[in-house]
Image (cartoon, rainbow, N blue to C red; front, side):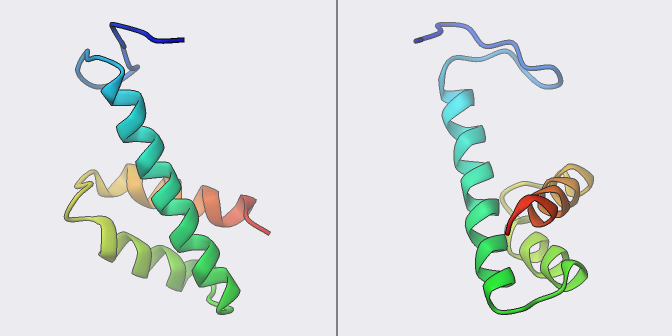
Length: 76
């Protein structure tokens, strides 16, 4: 699948680069959360530290915190 037009639920219309960017965002969250869990960090500390690390690049704090918390809950 190689879309020429992507229409996200919220946000601007764009090309396939939107998908690549969102995928990179989710992979970064997954990697940082997995590392934090491997170190034994709690959900609260993980959300705080990962969001602090990423907030400069992804300024929608509410969405970022929600994504980190969801990944924490799903990561074993």
